[in-house]
Length: 231
Image (cartoon, rainbow, N blue to C red; front, top):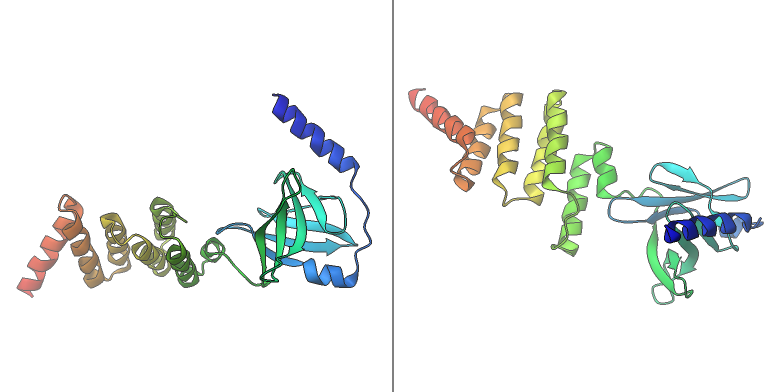
């Protein structure tokens, strides 16, 4: 309770101290743009009528300005500063700790940069797959998107009869989770509903080989091979 009260008090205090800064054209040009918040999100910095704004989690926010380069974002509960890394010379939104330590955390990227999640949300499934595989290559121990999340998205597309997009999403799940029999089962289901019996067979067979307890896959493979013999 004390912690919540203190946080609320600090936000109110900082808000009352927000400064009016006359930003130069050069400063606006150098600091405006997109910063990587995490593997799924970005922070967009922009200026309107000489006021600083950030767009984060789909909403625009006006931070508490402390000086030309430093500001406080209440929703993030972070003190941020525009900074250039001394070694790489790359621009960051640095997180400033309580003891004024500079942590170069949010890298500035091109304005058209998208995270894999942004590509996925935008229906750019091939680019999303490529992005997630690149992240996985950088750190194979970290899960960037859960298998069940991708599967749910694929079945939402199937329910809307968007077979081609559903197949792409399930293929992404296969690329990300090749050791899971369920991803092959779902991909087979999508191919079957789209009318591609051969690809349905190929993936059901893979799912069954990985899990002989998969009765649906077993039945489909059995019937497909039986029908091929009688053709």
